Length: 221
Picture 1 (tube, rainbow, N blue to C red):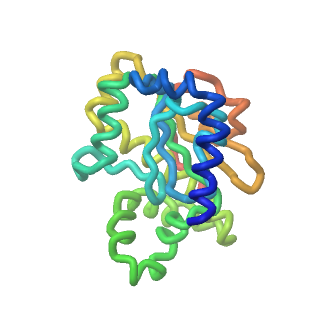
Picture 2 (tube, rainbow, N blue to C red):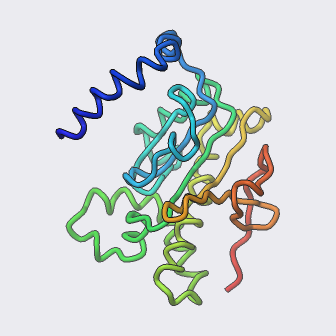
């Protein structure tokens, strides 16, 4: 806690004073560039990774960067997505998974969740990811390769779930919204974006914008 309090003091005396005009402008409202949906994991910092300023990202964080389908949830994710699209008018939504994700590790090895009933229940929203990996990645015997595949597949599954939200579906139909699937590798600093044309994740520098519609086929067995 001492470190946090010290940080607040440094922010007020250094960063805030140097960007006071920005913060005064933000007091009048926000117009974020994108909705950024990522994991709660402390090792990923959306603003640091994207080098964005306060007011530029509208952020949802939860275990496993999960987006429950519209019909299965009336929680914070649903409300935040609707507000971002219908009120703030974001033009892009990014779902960003990350390497070594503990939530995806728990999805693969559910014996770890025996004493975590709330986590187990939450990961039901990633059951499609679990099924895809079980039935289509049996050839991956290495645990880390299997986890990496799960992280990528989960990003794509959650993008599909995102499309069930009426505000998203409507904006997509008008051509006012683009969806992006990313994976961040915190051990290298690389970000990989999904390319639907090749059904692969590539370094984000090689990904075209706006991204084409996210559709994909299952990987070869």
